Length: 170
Image (cartoon, rainbow, N blue to C red; front, side, top):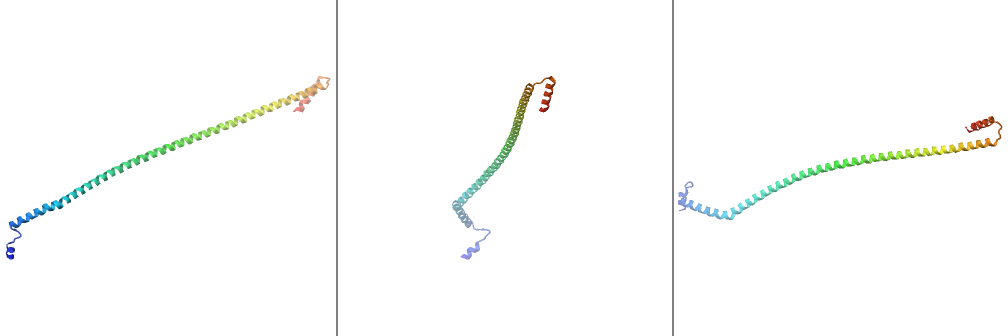
């Protein structure tokens, strides 16, 4: 009997009953396997797709943040350069001002020293002139005393005495 069953079997033309039961078993297995396996697999694939999309979005957001940070750093660097240029300019201006003040102070000090020296020279000259006048006055008095003390008989003798005394002074 087994050989009879095999004799009627044709791969190209299956028996309609066998075809029906094969389809029925396939549908039954597909339904239960679909519920048990396909849905979790499908959910896992959807979850993975969502995670990948979130990762891509996060990467884009981080990339945008990095670009913003790069721009911010460039701005900060430019501001720092401007600030350093400003500080250097201020320092140079301060140094120039300080140098000008030092030159002005030195000139003023030199003028003061010069004025003091001129004043001292004028004082010394005035003192020397006063001493000279005093000396001349003293000599004139000495001459007058000598002229008066000596009894002179003629004017010629007086003139000769005065000329002699003047010679002695020089």
